[in-house]
Amino acid sequence: YPELATYVSPEAGANVVVPHRLAISLLQAHGLKNMNNFTGDSPYVTCEVKHHDPAAESTRVETNAVAEGDTLNPFWGETHNLEPWFEGESLEFTIYDKGLVASKTEGKVVLPCDIFSPQGFSGMVAISGLPHALLHVIVRPLGPLVSSGETAEDSASSKKKKKKVKVS
Image (cartoon, rainbow, N blue to C red; front, side, top):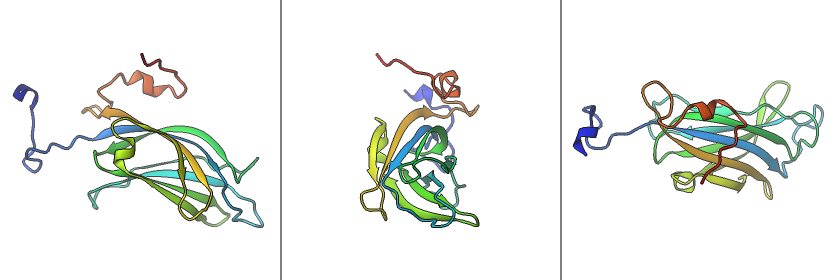
């Protein structure tokens, strides 16, 4: 449908790269190890897009630190919108332990693009650097961004965090 191609930048040529938005749910981790002997553990997790373009700005989201309860099996239960993400880019999840002065890296997980795009992903992934540790994540592609910064799909549903959507 040539009538749909309204603007093509000279650099892009035939390969028009469209930024997308992802919904990232950082649910919980299992089997973390004790890192702060004196202050107690306060784990949090980040999700960062591994951009193909080395000059691109960092695209990442971060959970709050869990300082109470079972900090070796922390529950975050947070969902964040992550943008821009481009087709082919992987996601890197990093678990940190927030200390008094600085944060220590506990472990990382890289989720390749073909695992979550286009169908989405929900499950436990092994954390490298931490044997037997798992991170429970959900990645949902929300579609391409349009010029206003909203997705082409109904953007009202993404504004409410806990809205349940029935898929028929």
